[in-house]
Amino acid sequence: MLRTSQLPAVTVDSDGRALVAWYDSQNRSGSDIQGQYFDEAGTLVGEAFVINRTTTGNQSRPALATLAAGGIVAVWESFAQDGDLFGIYGTVLREDGTFREEFRVNQEVQGSHRTPHVIARSDGGFLVGWMQSTAPQHVYLQAYAPSGLPEGNNQLVSVDGTLNVSSSQNIELLELDDGSVLAAWDGKNGGSNIFARILRSEDPENLPDLDGDGIPDAQDDDIDGDGFLMTKTPSPGPFRMGRLGRRWHWGQ
Image (cartoon, rainbow, N blue to C red; front, top):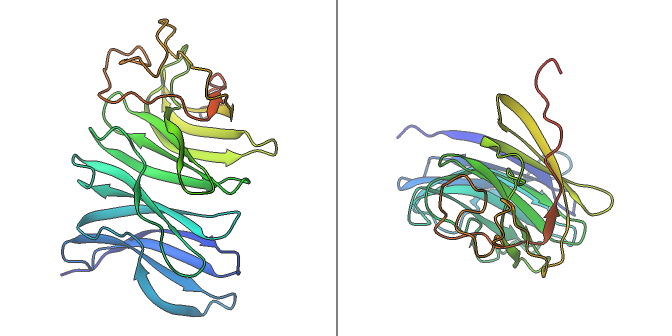
């Protein structure tokens, strides 16, 4: 069997060791997310190891972030593990070398959820962003507390009640000094552009209504008003989302 290793991700832990992760096809039942530590001199530390806890099927496209309280969160996409196509899964590598229980990020299991991105938050938690590639293709995020438990539910990022950005993908997240988060991604709204918006901490009692139909998103089967019904509607998460920002494209 021809072995394939692709799509590396890297972070540095609280001890100064670098962790490199990638997906590797050496597993005959599919591909795994491999990890390898290096010390500050660039010397291998220990052996390469498998990060994903479920080893059947194909795991690919890892992303890493070092947590403020120690440990590393790893996320990746996994084929058919959620019962349909691709889903987003993750785990936390503790500083003692053990793993937290593997968790699924996407709550909606229909279609493909792909290209995960993860960042650490200053409060010890973390944020995961990804795209759902089923038409009209939107980007989402999920917040996690320092305990590793989810805060609220999946939040739709690429719709704000005024703009509906289809074909959204490649989401990037950045925590700002005031604790709010900048999300940016590429998508289409009259052309291919770069979109961005600010996400601020939200009172969980405040129920947003993205499409302005008078039905809070937690009870709305079509939260973005695009005519596509969701079988499991994301309810409010911990962020209040600002309007979609300026759209950039080449030459502007």
